[in-house]
Image 1 (cartoon, rainbow, N blue to C red):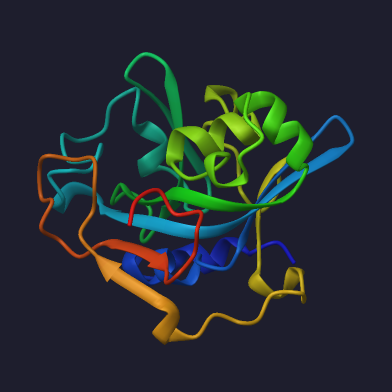
Image 2: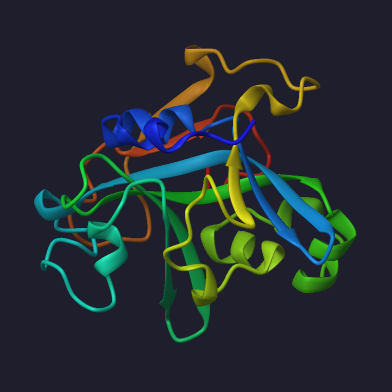
Length: 197
């Protein structure tokens, strides 16, 4: 059910596409808060001007250069957290940003944390989903295959049909100023929980 570390060794854009339909779970206080991944972005490390790794290894981004399959969590705009999965070859600084989730389990807790009852506003953006799942810098560096923060395979919940390649929209990344023309954003077609159409 939990994706193995070897999954993240694939080419980063491939991981970004294959994470669609998987589940991001946070096991906390006897409760599992769970969302289905519906939008991702790939960041290509040292070769990508939009990547945190582009400047080389620093104290802040060191997790990006460490073992694959670990969570890279960073603080942005002095108020929000974003969560990524470290991918590719160790030392290259590549990762996949999880941009949006479809809420599945623990929805009342998400609504309380987000202070809204609107289901489409719970996880439709990287900062919103980390707030809903209570992901913070305390989770930076945790293995996504062996910690309270986990990514599950698409077949973990059989109520959802498998993802068809034709269901995946490939487009340019958003919210960045550099290398914004690269088609490295992926989302599920006709899903109401993505961050932006």
